[in-house]
Image (cartoon, rainbow, N blue to C red; front, side):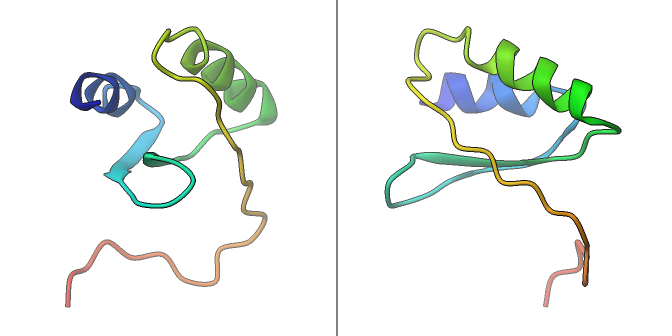
Length: 70
């Protein structure tokens, strides 16, 4: 799994990658200029033989965004 996580983390648009519990094993946060960039990223991601499926959520508005740790 670490190999897949590291491959995802190398992508320019990816801001962060986390191992998680639940329905999925990994979550990645990424930003794209447009839907074409997102589409290209997803198609590339799904060519990885270890990735069985992906779920995409799109944020339309940012209420707060920070990288500061408490």
